[in-house]
Image (cartoon, rainbow, N blue to C red; front, side, top):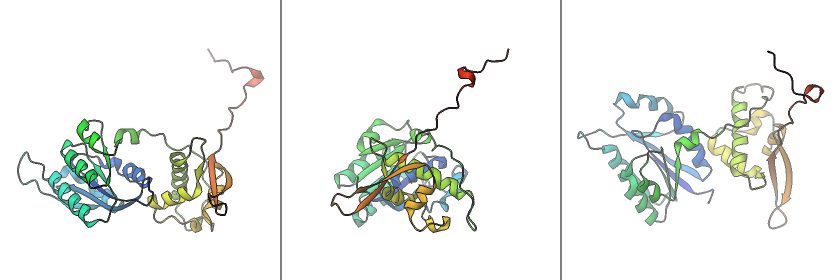
Length: 261
């Protein structure tokens, strides 16, 4: 997929929990750049209160939509209208519709007819027609079940830097390397850097005392590294692969320890 593809993310707050938001944005950052981030709902309802605390953190624009009539979902209509407005601006190449509601089936089909790449995200209760209407559909429960990156010892703290930020960056680099690696486990440092910036816009290797991303990644002691020639024979690419896990400690006297009775 084109890594420069621009996406509009439209979230149905009535059908998605705020606990998935980081997973949603991280997953989509692997596919391109998020240009629009909008979430729709009636923000006067107490049920959406948990969303309000994360909107600023992720720079998501809340779109207020009152429920004018009982039993009618005005939020869906607002999302569909906005999607078509964005479509006609020509500013994006793809859409991500985050909902478990079958009402967006026709919208997904229409966007695909216009040549846009449509990613759907929702829970496993999502009806099959909506899933089939998307180019790709990702179940949020599957994202939530992905194993976290292997825990490693944190680097020494850096003056002026939040100590909690470094473990998060290390875990993100491990996860991105795993997501973008080829069949032999090799991933491009350049690709890792591009996706890392999308997930952490304020990331800068100079905060950790380095001038180059390659040297920063090497200092983490998480990967083996190699340099390969580019396709034109001149440009070089740096690849990384996760180091193998250390062998388990040897058993005493070659035997497993006895259990105490």
